[in-house]
Amino acid sequence: MQRKAIALLSGGLDSTLAVKVLLEQGIAVEALNFTSPFCTCTGKNAGCKSEAVRVAEEFKIPIKVMHKGTDYLEIVRNPKHGYGKGMNPCVDCRIFLLQKAKQYMEESGADFVITGEVLGQRPMSQRRDTLRVIERESGLEGLLLRPLSAKHFNPTIPEQQGWVDREKLLSISGRSRKEQFELAEELDVKNYPCPAGGCLLTELSFVGKIRDVFDNSDELNMRDFRLLKLGRHFRIGRRTKVIVGRNEAENDLVERNIQAGEAALRWKDGKSPLAALMGESSPELLERAAQILLRYTKAEPGETATIAVTCDGVESEFVTANALDEAAVESLRV
Image (cartoon, rainbow, N blue to C red):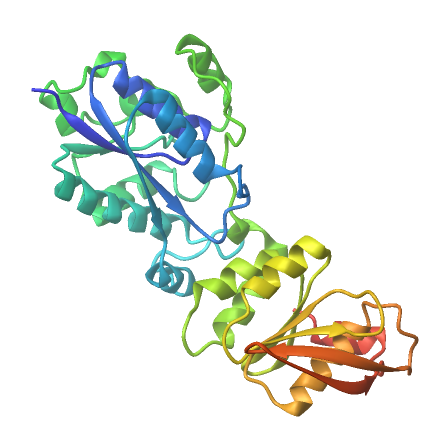
């Protein structure tokens, strides 16, 4: 009887190798890939999701892409096991993903779960003690196999039962990737452009933007977190934010994410970026958004300007002055 494993496949080198090692042993593998607004290697035709799909196609295994929902955002806001150097709840994140994997394992009739985790590679979530916590709290004790570091741990059920040959598993540890590169050469694994992945939650410069959304939202909206990677952000009210695009591509993306009741603003009399007024609105807030926008145009200081506004498909105009100096604008910047 062929055994089946569910693999967490990011598209990076480690998870790709973990899958390949199990396929070499004749295990049927089905991949799970999780998308997040905080991934630093995303793009329309590139990034972790695309790489995971490419790997799955190359290995001829099925893959299911799951989106981390608002329940994940609540974990980011209040992680049981705390943060790393930024707002990265790495231990809680792994538990969350593996709980989803366990559920999918049971639904799909798989026997166990595999990951590309390497002992000692990541300082928060891949220490021996935290790996045990993750396994226990995910509900996968005995059924979570880490092929690249398996020989550093007690045999799992798949090894004990002979589904997997422990002698063909690895004993990689530490932060160096030399052994992974050698294994990739041995297994003929190529084209791994995002070997270590990346998470904006670890970037200290990004923390303020994330906290701003948490602190000023009654209900969490995944859209608000996706937009954090775009444009310049300004907080002008408890429930109101302005985003100013930095180029035409960003203008288009920001405009496409405007929701009912929110407005797009442009300087009518000259080429300018787009500003989006998001959240609650009022004439005063609309004018403040326009004044922020004008700081990124060629409008002269103190000059009056006509602002074109589009809200719920209705276009209108109003006149305001380029009255905010740089210091005033920066004081509102998130």
